[in-house]
Length: 352
Image (cartoon, rainbow, N blue to C red; front, top):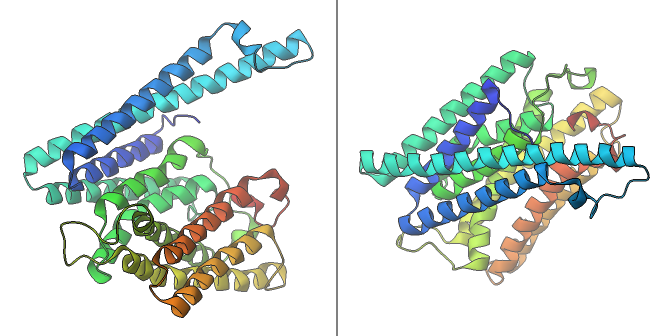
């Protein structure tokens, strides 16, 4: 992990703070939400203290978990670990600032506006505006659509959170603003701390009119299907429907509506990828690891719709279990296949 002390990095951290503040303002159980945020801040602070101690610890401590053949190798390894621990300390320190800034912003906005939902909406929209500014800033910097590497993908995914949340609430009657805001902050964490914001030239394979629609279809589907897991998890862990709102959809129906929206976009991304593969590599299907795992993700959601069609609501938690499995497959497709060394020779290795 590493802190990005750049204009774009600071914008990402501001968006994370605004999203968390919006979630706090949206929360119905305010005291519980405040306690959760305070507990999170305390855990992050303890982690920062621990990493800071490790970064300056005596070399005798490192002998417990460093096995080097020579003293020079041992000293080199200790220096590497100290640098890594110091970077982790900075990341945890910055995360703590974000968490407590979000706490202050959320409480201050709720106190000033007096209407908690309005305060949350203002903070959520503000976060989206800052995210758009960061995305456009990076687009201008790299001189092409910033969909190439993992940093750019997560930056875009975090930016999409508010418009997708608004669309789902207005047209699908699927609420969950607080959860959406938290999800947006979580999605932005890899862009803020894990992946490098390195400018890269667009390789010839990506220089196509299909680049933007193919990647955009996948990213929209990923955010929507990630959002679908939230009501699915609530059904599995807590109850069938939200409390205090008789008109609210049951969690299983909310998850189903989101899946029905996300699955066509997932299919569109797969089909556009096949078309692009034909144009770039001469065949619609090349048995590339990324292609295979994308297809596996698609099959999981197809199995969900088939299972739900066959059994309806008889096995609600099983229905939602398919959605959770689908998101796991998407995470593996997005992260493991792109980053694992065993797949480094794949045709999509430029996305790592």
